[in-house]
Length: 95
View 1 (spheres, rainbow, N blue to C red):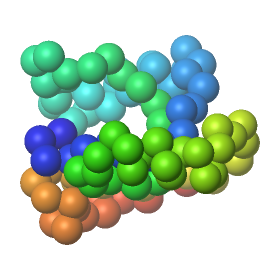
View 2: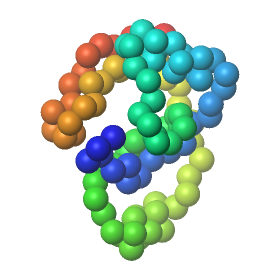
View 3: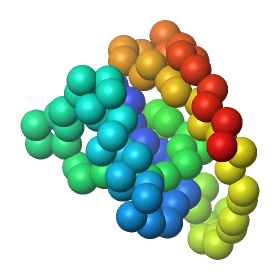
């Protein structure tokens, strides 16, 4: 994720089915995890950017650490190479 700094995110549960979908998607798209990349971590990104540690701590202190849930109705497949401004939606897959 060169240039893409995960700033604020919500961790998701990682049931075996989700990990299996991840592995299958790598095969379908002919991809391999990047060397040195962190392990698969399902999450919902809320904010990207190059912010100071102090500002991140301020944001977290204002919103607090939350537990939340939602029902996903599908997924958007996003081509996320390059700068965030060039990302493009490739497909929507309903569940």
